[in-house]
Structures are given as C-alpha cells and as structure tokens.
Length: 108
Image 1 (cartoon, rainbow, N blue to C red):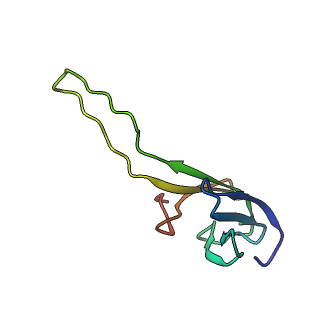
Image 2 (cartoon, rainbow, N blue to C red):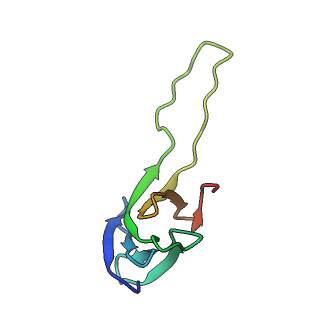
C-alpha cells in the first residue's frame, strides 16, 4: 500500500490476510511469509474518495445436510464452495470479490 492501512481480516483457514488501505487498494497477503498474492482497486473510476474502510472474508460452503422431499416439484440448488472478500469504501460502495478467481463479482 502507498498509504495507511485502515483494517484487515484473516481468511477462515488462516492462510490469507486481506488489508484495506486509505489509498483505495485492497491487498491479499500470504499469512506465513507476508508475500503479496494480489492487489485490487476498490473503486474502478478512482474518484477522490476511493479510500477503503474495511474488508471481511466470507466462506460460502455447500450445505452438508440434504433434506429429501416427497414432493416431485421440489428442487435444491447446490452452491460451490467459495471464499469471498467484501470491501467497503469511502465512496459509499460495497464490493464483493472471489478470492480464488481474483475477480470482482458484481456488475456496476
């Protein structure tokens, strides 16, 4: 980062640290040796207020329990196991990132 770090979070498995910076960047770091794995810009247009206030990891896991219904019209949706990162910026936006794919998930 080129400015102060406002916040950080550790991934559920303890392997990655995410940091939110005043310069508008989000960093992903390997916990064991501090190596930078990736860097994102929170704001795509880079306005004056691009500061990132906070980041938080979310683990989305498929349900381990399955319920069987006798109804033939019932269906279930299987969600893939994913590690997401949510960032909140001074520009009043929240962005969701797929950590494994290193990409932004939302459409603007």
